Image 1 (cartoon, rainbow, N blue to C red):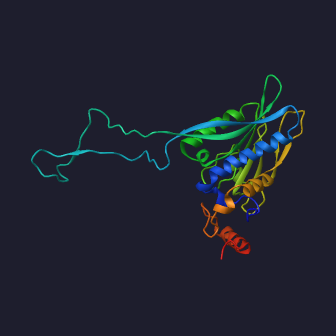
Image 2 (image 1 turned 90 degrees about the vertical axis):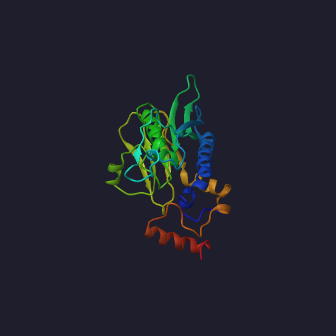
Image 3 (image 1 turned 45 degrees about the horizontal axis):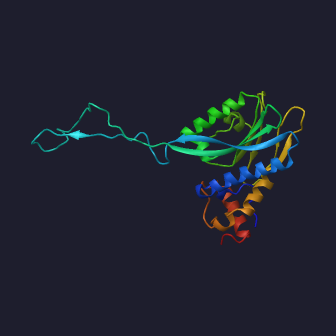
Length: 262
């Protein structure tokens, strides 16, 4: 049973589903690449470790201790902050999050990384994880490696390589695919509405090879059909994050027509 939506299913952005979506989509792109790439190229799955603070930690919470004079009742007038000889240390353990990504490499010797493919996750779009992702992304943008970024999350900050301001002068989007060809100053972008099918995108290889084309919609349809989503997604509720009002009306009609909402 396919997803009821024509493209990206906004219900799968929720945290309880995204982990499966991310790993399955990476795996499906990896499978398709190794099935159809020309001879001399192969796809490999690599991992990047992001070290971030646990969800829900707020670093701006202050801890204050008060003292009162002996034999006197505490009051606002007598309360004062004690200066500690040693700082009050609060240990906040950091969390390691491992996210897979794909590298297309040449199979000759020496092996060369030709193209990197990233499917963004929430950790890439907020806080320390975003900072670490942008640092890594900028290294790739300055290298001889092509970079394809796939952002199927409406939440979080803009994190793909194309500058947000310049892109918003041209169009709006819910989801975004962004390609930077090595040693070029331009980006090829596929802005996608929640109402649109996911695009067929170009994956550049070496100069003597044509671009490899891959249908993200075909890949998404397969992971939806073979995954747990039709059993676990509750379409009677609104997705998180919520859609814009006009899209909520459209989605409600779509789900009603498919018998998934009364």
